[in-house]
Length: 262
Image 1 (cartoon, one colour):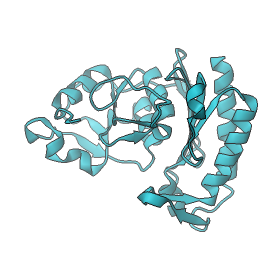
Image 2 (image 1 turned 120 degrees about the vertical axis):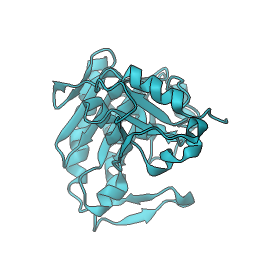
Image 3 (image 1 turned 135 degrees about the horizontal axis):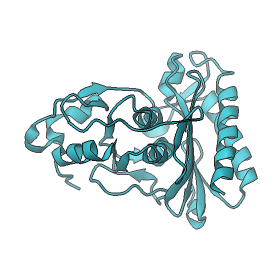
């Protein structure tokens, strides 16, 4: 079942890439979502419609959670659910750059079992199935072996480095990098190109579900900001931030973060 679900996601992601690249990001029709939730384009909606038809058509007993589809409680009654971001990094897509991705995952009883992150303009296809390892374009990938905080390369936004987020207001000597797509950030750490990723804000499941499994299968410890295990298909589809790195570096980062006030 896992391999079959992964094959389904891979084929759907490739079709998503074909549809999305048929649009020009800078000229695609766009709107701003209500509640300052960011932009959406006609490409996002076209990809979402195709994925929903294709994936739920193949698995009619699976639930559906997507950034671009109004959410309902129906998915909570299903043991397995697709968790989808049709285009992660829509602002990058609008700007005409290449760092946007399709993020597709299957959750079973709250655990991600199959995942794909596809960047069509970079020709990068990240894949994972539970217990079967993580791959980039068919080749196995592993997280870095960095253990020390000093000099560790971390994908994070600037607000993460606010001293209030760190014990004793002392920010570690990390090397900060950034990519606009959260799914891509997760996958780059799985690939070993960066040592860790950290986001402290509540994170939508569709942004992180696929990348979380790819990271774990690549050998990372992947948790929320407090060190708790990530669970998916929640009634409110957010998790409490994400911290991912090799086990030793993860522990070091977790120890230095200020206690969560929630």
